[in-house]
Length: 230
Image 1 (cartoon, rainbow, N blue to C red):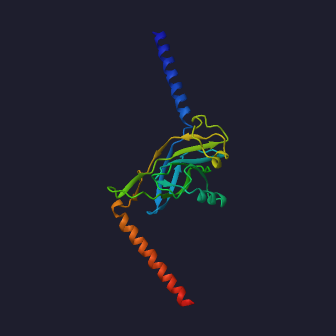
Image 2: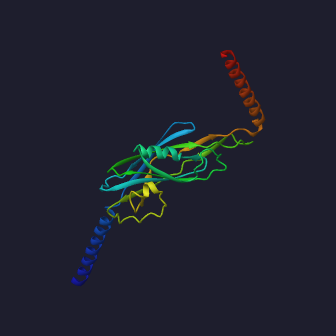
Image 3: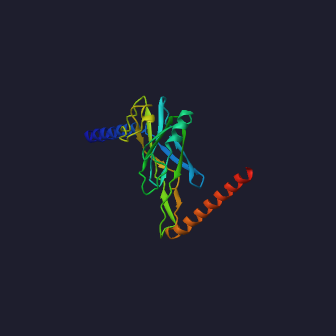
């Protein structure tokens, strides 16, 4: 009887130790939440991302967002360079660089925004623009859903609970820290759909003639004004 009691006691102790080990292994996990707001409703909009890492606190870290930008939208590399030069943000992108081509010919972009990590709340901002769509016969609008970004954390001290990310981070952020780790999170905002108007192909000739007429009228007015000045 005593033998069975000792066995049961040992099993209970082992179970308690296992529970303690499991709880300790989860104590360093980051409970991250992400939400965003969109400013503007035209061709140019600002996306403000708010990253909440809860109780996680560590020095000498950087936080980054990696966002896939579909071909119907784009980020302007010149704007990113200006913001980085002014010290407002560190960001870079790979992929399509031509901001003038139509969405149908454009390639997608991979954008990375990074900054010094603040314990608790971190806010990162990006300006996106919509590309022109070629005129079509049966569509008045194109709906583009903004993809959810990936959250990356890079620290001087290893965060062993998370593996090193395989995302190809662009140079401006890669040079800040060598190893970045992707952090899972809960999205607190609803998906955002960007509605892009599309011209009607059947109205192309009408629009062309109106444009030519407006240009001709403007030219006549300018020439007339210059003539009277002389």
